[in-house]
Image 1: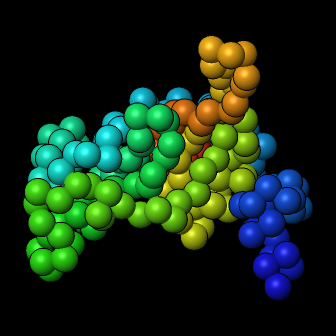
Image 2 (image 1 turned 30 degrees about the vertical axis):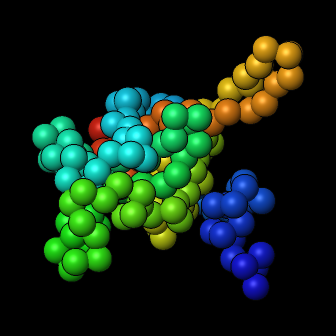
Length: 164
């Protein structure tokens, strides 16, 4: 029945224009949000260090990305603290023990309308940029680079700043 849900269809890239009376910002591209470069954690960072880094830098969440570029998930300050306080995780454990591996990705060329549909269900989306890379023998592959993390507050700030 998911294919009958327009918002699910938009979020998963099967449908573009569903809203008849779209707001003025609906078709603007995600890249116009001017997101700041994200804070990225490597998988071997300990929970203790992740908490310290997030607090010091003033972030609530950060993507956890392997050195290969593979996006493993998102770590949030609240989830990490809750897990440690509940005894499920130790401060010395790697941050991969507390990551959310269920997350939505959106591209720089996608619309704010698509982003809006994602943010109705998710607290954030990881903004990715795809690049074609070539290795030594000339074969190519697509690699996703984390460009930013976007929340509903980012979208709201953009809309209110640029309200027509």
